[in-house]
Image (cartoon, rainbow, N blue to C red):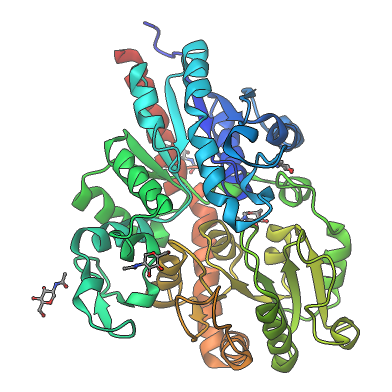
Length: 482
Ligand SMILES: *[C@@H]1O[C@H](CO)[C@@H](O)[C@H](O)[C@H]1NC(C)=O
Ligand SMILES: *[C@@H]1O[C@H](CO)[C@@H](O)[C@H](O)[C@H]1NC(C)=O
Ligand SMILES: *[C@@H]1O[C@H](CO)[C@@H](O)[C@H](O)[C@H]1NC(C)=O
Ligand SMILES: *[C@@H]1O[C@H](CO)[C@@H](O)[C@H](O)[C@H]1NC(C)=O
Ligand SMILES: CC(=O)N[C@H]1CO[C@H](CO)[C@@H](O)[C@@H]1O
């Protein structure tokens, strides 16, 4: 390939969960706008909706985005037929079986590499085997991370120094060694995959493998922007000697309402109905509550949340996971009637970006999944943080302590999903802190500034725009030298 402008071809392989597929579609669109061809690898059931999402935005792009499917071994892994997406796994007990199924994708994936011979593979962090698969064919593997630099750094520092072993109780706090910003944690804040290393469950092993494969990969693309966490972006590159490109927020590549609303899944509520409801509300008067698409809350917890929302006196939109919450027995008696006009409960999937961007929305109760956190930043909405698993606890620290654009739900940390449930007053207190008063005003101002910086980052010559160009340039010269 001895031309000055080789026809660069990137193979993108997102993990099979919506929170991972959606930013990958956005990334493919970004490649397309720079004249780079990309192929998204997925399974048959996930493919149709991806193609719909791409179709909607075709007119903005010059280069093709292709989809290649590989069969998903549901039955072989002990999953129900047609369960090709983490979001459709019927019970959390089957998550491991799902991960196991994804490891069986290695062989068909390698066959695809042989057939497609792309110049680069950008595969999700969960596919730890992809580094070796790609290197078999002399292809660089880049890791796509659904998280931020802060949590990558914090997780590495925790893993290296294990400060949680130095304290005698779960409530004693310690500093995360070496990490800039003097970040204090307690053992309860630390994800189980770090504290439970000895007790190596299969899931912990999986995360360890992912980390190890990441260290051997060519580099990492991160859905974040430099101005948001420059200290940690620099720290990650300089202290750990890794290549990394902050190219986000990738969701900002979606220009019009149709694209923003239909993020892969069709929303369960008519987007206009939802926005019309918001139109009747005063600016910054509505709380948006969502814990993401993966985790479902116990009924007792849902009831507590309902009561907190009622007693806080705030207006709200609450997104509840659909499949197991079709009936409303978990709601306090007559709740929806009492809350009529004040609260809107959406079951299933909501046009999250459009909701967050609406001027009526004044705060976001979030599980701190990075996808959602970044969307809140980009929309300029302060957060009430309620992390549930994994690196969400690190993301919380970034939001509440480093950026100071949110407050935590002060409660029995670390056991916020199972076991004891978080009582009404903890959430109610946090809601009031973020919605009312001087501190609320300060947080709102800070996050609005960040929202502006996010938009600038992805515009021509912005930091993410330039990082994306640098990535493409590097891949071009790599492909020439091969
Ligand atoms: C990711 O983004 C979409 C679209 O904006 C949002 O609706 C969804 O809840 C997010 N997914 C997760 C897993 O947080
Ligand atoms: C653990 O505690 C000892 C004694 O206070 C200290 O010297 C050491 O640096 C600590 N280690 C970590 C990883 O925090
Ligand atoms: C190891 O895991 C088991 C099962 O999840 C749990 O009951 C036990 O407490 C764990 N042990 C340690 C030392 O964390
Ligand atoms: C971006 O930078 C290039 C090179 O410095 C310059 O020619 C171009 O006008 C800039 N574009 C914008 C929109 O500022
Ligand atoms: C985004 C997407 O295409 N989601 C689909 C993935 O596959 C599951 C089946 O497991 C479908 O239910 C989703 O709609």
